Figure (tube, helix red, strand yellow):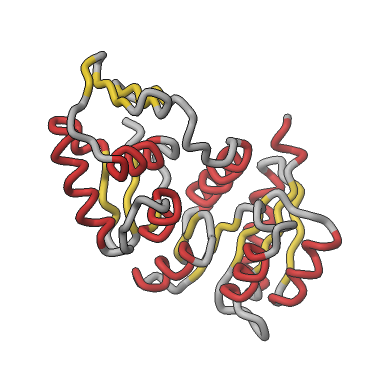
Length: 232
């Protein structure tokens, strides 16, 4: 199967946890390597580029956040999905990790089944094309057309959408099920004619929900992190 070809780098200084993750991912058909230090992880990436990285935050020497920052700031490695696996479970820690560029965040202690699921979801996301604001979207009962600057709900237009409303909806709907931070949303909708701060995203979401009417619950707030477009 295609999954057997996927190579995962597990960056974890707790040997027991690293072995547990490696054993289970190998059983799932993945190729798995491990690193116990942040600097060793960066070296491992250059030696054999992984399809995904599971990254602890509290590492000896270089922290996991610094590893994440360096990888995401390098165009050669920025596209590698990073799933943080950490005992740091406060909302602020999760927000920092996501805004640093991590694709997902799993807190310890974790379920192996949940971790395996998160790995597969992150790999599927990687296969998807990068965000394209010109893509026509058909999701749930909505048709979102950038070329016509129009949103149809069961064939009927949703009226009153501003440019920012439209960009917000399009971006969220292009990533159904993904939890997107306010900064990620802001980066996607920012334009020369769009003046919006990170906190103003909340206000804009409220406005967009009102215009969506009975479909307002399609956009779900994730406390302390951001928003997502519900898949169903």
